[in-house]
Length: 367
Ligand code: 5AD
Ligand code: SF4
Image (cartoon, helix red, strand yellow):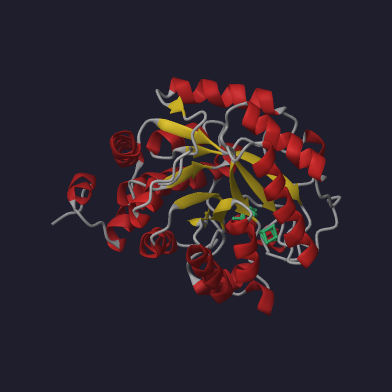
């Protein structure tokens, strides 16, 4: 039987071949795919989009991923760490504006002093916002002890991208030392799950050497791992990184955005109750990128709340947008776009992954 979008979408189980077919659809087929993602999202995940205020706490990183602008060996950026007061003020902004949730992100650091600073911040934010602000961490690979320390201090969600699920490709993207192994990354995801976090992961799309088969495997990986949240977006080349040398090997910006939206729509179809982010990288390559992702199935957006003075130094990739926008401007612009799509913003709601609740049989609610 010839494969068509319709007969694939009727299948109870969509396998890797089907996913590859869907990722290769032309414009007309893609529109049907996006519509299906949209239908599933609106019927099964709801019409709410949740805001997570993003705080880029520090750009100090001890790693050297070949694709990333803030890798340790890049001397172009001034390294910073936000003061506790700045973090608390930003968290207060999120709380006052009813965001209900923030993400603290940083380059990877693993000193005891770093774990302790984060623990203290978690406790302070918890006290100052009367436990109302939900905190997600995105602080890289850490020991089990550290994951527990932060969980006990009040963090309940953790984002750690697998980056690519193909171990051979992972090895191409990272230095071949002990600090950059695929197995450690995988192990970290398992430890996070074991500790009790809602676990988020994700990949980059349109990397040099990456194939459509790799991307189909990425989606199968999310399903096999039974992940709670996903944030994925296009790879964007950066001049100060070793991977700049391969910039001629990547798909065009438009194709990377198209692939990213397809990935979102397919993921929404195969995992209807997880949280899926519309990422900033999508918007970087196409001003409408994030809205397209929201239409096709994403239900989380992470407005950048980092104080403007630091943003020029947290450039993971080139042309990162809104580097100068104050949080109020970003929020209002996003609000307008989301309402225009017919969705509403889940103000004051934690917006936990329904998938996590369903798996754990727990109801996590704001008291
Ligand atoms: N393009 C797109 N995403 C990138 N990241 C790092 N460098 C790039 C890049 N050049 C992503 C990685 C990382 C996250 C914080 O940013 O997936 O996990
Ligand atoms: Fe550091 Fe993360 Fe960038 Fe790798 S991707 S260099 S760990 S900030």
